Image 1 (cartoon, rainbow, N blue to C red):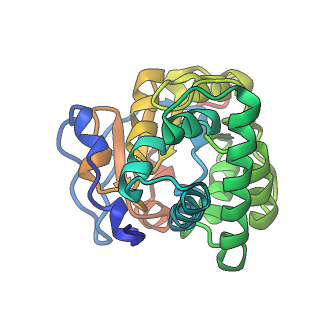
Image 2 (tube, helix red, strand yellow; image 1 turned 30 degrees about the vertical axis):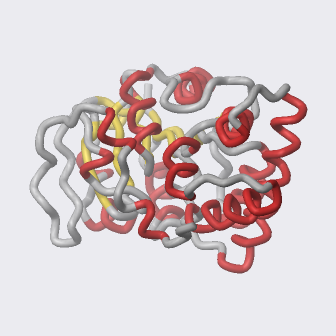
Amino acid sequence: MKTEASLWANDPVGAQFPAGPPQGKLTPLGGSEPRAAGSVGAFIFDMDGTMVDSMPWHAQSWVVFMQRHGIEMELSEVLRRTNGRNGAECMRILFDRELDDAQAWELIAEKEAVYRALFTPMFTEVAGFSAFEKAARGRGLKVGVGTAGDRHNVAFVLNHLQLATPPQAIVGGDEGLPGKPEPAIFLEVARRLQVTADACIVFEDAPLGIEAARRAGMRAVAICTSHSAAALDGPHVIATVRNFEELIENHFLETLHVATA
């Protein structure tokens, strides 16, 4: 069973979604410049793989969990089928049978406890996230989080990040909404922020999340921590970078017209 981080580089999921036009010209750091303008009122961040560099530890926790339960499935297939799904959806996929909500959430709680134990001593944000989020707030942008993770993982991440100001809206995968690529999580974040979908930019590291942003009518920035740029392409993707330091270096915020009304 493969556990290497390279599993994230070759992504068959992205092939389901049609690619958009070519990215903007490459920056010195390998990302691309923004290619679409428009008024922006809010940023919505996915959490795992976007705010924090957690995906290798999620992968390891899946290995531990499957060994405990005698599940035979290639890790690459588990990651492909579960990334972006809420916890109950993940467990129904993994066990390949119907589970009631109580069973499903009990199982995901077990798996996520393993993940948190593994990631705690290695906790790392995606490079530049905290500085970028602070700078965005300084320009008057609202900030929300839309994740398939549950409230325990959200609390875990925010406690470790120690942001100066908490996100103004958080929607998690345990709130009863369908997981990505359905747009419900992102649309609910926008509703709570009181910002229209077309005024939101989503930051995502996974193809299902990029597709969820498209279905929500939102622009997206692809953060290539766990998938290739090609897997995260789309007509609504306005920039593709490896991390937030590239966005800062490329003066991404300065290119935006911020709607403060």
